[in-house]
Length: 181
Image 1 (cartoon, rainbow, N blue to C red):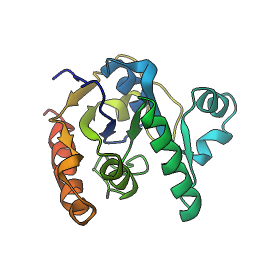
Image 2 (tube, helix red, strand yellow; image 1 turned 180 degrees about the vertical axis):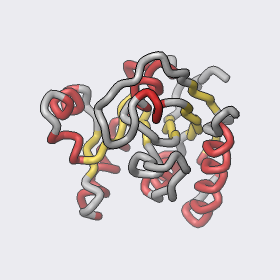
Image 3 (cartoon, helix red, strand yellow; image 1 turned 135 degrees about the vertical axis):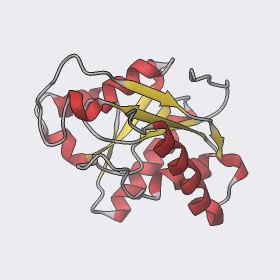
């Protein structure tokens, strides 16, 4: 299903996270690449060239070990979203090492509800084979797929319903990312 964007709405894309290769696949999937930024852990900004690229591209650094700094990052994301920028969040917070969908963190969902964004669930397949976790090794010729789910309008949720929203997104991403046998 192609991603269709409504004018005047905020969007947060969420997917499973298995590899650094998830990001290039995600960029190939969305129609408005110029207006996408991701929230990335601060540690990635320390990697030579990569970190400079993230900063130049105006991605949002998040310090997951410091709640106050994390909240500042979410405020920065809100400001970007006001200007029409879409945000990508990996709700697991880190790459899966075993291929299973990890526990979701709440921050991205809080951001979505506060900004009344539309969440677009995406299931990525094959990236863990193209670039396995914990390596920088590429394995060319792998079949890669991105499956787009049904958009979820968070204007229909309040903070008390955050867990329900998380489960709805999780259910979609789990189904969309299932490996074909």
